Image (cartoon, rainbow, N blue to C red; front, top):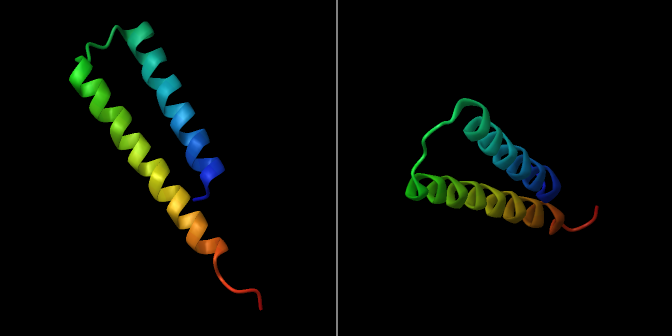
Length: 60
């Protein structure tokens, strides 16, 4: 997963959360919402690290 797809995944996830809250009136506490955002940011960070490591390979 590269940084672009990770960022796209983050945006899609946040939009899905907001839409779910608006449509279904999902009750998510602020602490739970913050935890979810932190989890997504960690996933994005891992995506960036993986893509950076993939780019660091020496050219053949």
